[in-house]
Amino acid sequence: MILDELAAHARERVAADKAKISLEDMKAQAEALPKGDFRFEKALAGRDCAFICEVKKASPSKGVIDPVFDFEAIAQSYEQAGADCVSCLTEPKWFLGSDEIFQKVRGIVTKPMIRKDFTVDEYQIYQAKVLGADAVLLICTLLDTETIRDYIGICDKLGISALVETHDAQEMQSAVRAGARLIGVNNRNLKDFTVDLGNAARLREGAPDGTVFVAESGVASPADAAALRKTGADAVLVGEYLMRAADKKQALDALREATK
Ligand SMILES: O=P(O)(O)OC[C@@H](O)[C@@H](O)c1c[nH]c2ccccc12
Image 1: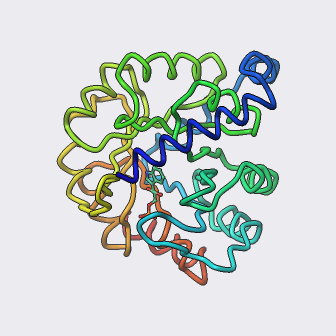
Image 2: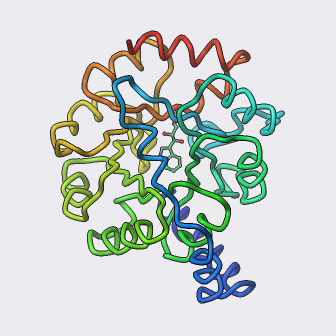
């Protein structure tokens, strides 16, 4: 299963990174930085539907999405288009991301950024903070409730947000029990890549009042964004659709308009 491979490879990457900079040193570097102000989650909680725009070259389900991948130009256009937040993949093998790409995008974008990777070790949270991230992704399929709670605690200390990603009712319960404030529902099943926009709608009621609810993946039109908003999404995370749009501002404007 691809998710197991992604997690296994993430563990290998962490081991290699730790050999260069130890956990203690990475933690010390992260903790020496000014504490964040949780601006990622703040940017998503408002009256209007918020948009998290993703910088993603490739994915395991789609292969290479943007062969040119001028990520600096993409970052600039997301910024100019008025993205509420920006997501940047750092997973190298299947998504063709990197920490270097993240840092370059970070240098361009003023909006809150999430480092999108497969978090399997607290090391990656400190690393994300050092890279300038405002948020990390915690995927429930990969982490038990206790671990999610611990990792949210680390994020809280650093002042960054944890987007806790769920895919079914059991994972939603786990996210809630772990104390997640920012809960995502992935409409794509990471086990077989099938997309079902109804997934966010079905799990919506499992997320308590006061949490910020993010519908993730599979938005292929303004109508899709409108449907997700109608079922109670506070924010929508969009990757491929914007990556393929020649005019990203026009595309984001159309998505936004549809959710009003
Ligand atoms: O390109 P899409 O279908 O708009 O999806 C974006 C985002 O939700 C997707 O990239 C994603 C959701 N959860 C993830 C976990 C890991 C990697 C990637 C993801």
